[in-house]
Amino acid sequence: MSFGAKLKKCRKDMSLSQKEFGQKIGVAESTVSLYESNKRFPDADTLKKISALFEVSLDYLLGNEPAKAAQPKSKGRGVRIPVLGRVVAGVPIEAVQEILDYEEITPEMAATGEYFALQVKGASMEPTLRDGDIVIVKKQPTVDSGDIAIVLVNGNDATVKEIKESPAGITLIGHNAAIYTPQFYSNKEIQDMPIQIIGKVVEMRRKF
Picture (cartoon, rainbow, N blue to C red):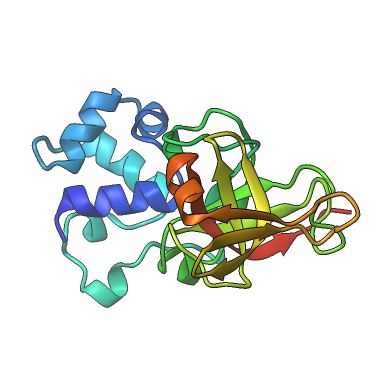
């Protein structure tokens, strides 16, 4: 793996944008882009800052450690992912400005895909999910019938619902039937509105 690829992996493992990473080591966002594309190489002082920030050795960054030994030294810490207050269609997760907090997931989980967290709003999924709960979401465009997913309807804020699939379309099911009637969308409506699945809920975290 090249220096630029290692740098990009470490940065993403810490859920940092190029701009945020550049601010931490004292270089411009454009310089970070040059580092990651291997068009420029940092000086010795900057390398030390990168090594300290990511808690990896200089030998790892410079490719002098064997692959097995060259893993970031997490010291038991997980990978930080943003807790979002809202998600809008067409906006990359990393570009969403309303970041409420950060949660940690294990490095093993992080290695299986792209994750973000979302704060649940409303009572439509009670008692399974309550207002204010945090759900950990694996970003993916499809889920299996019966999964709880993050869905965008008409490009508006994300809703958290159980998905029931059928040949004719999908039904969004809220577990609190008293306040949310299941909503069916035909295959045509899915295309026209659109209805967009952006991720599968894989974990719930509740603060007391």
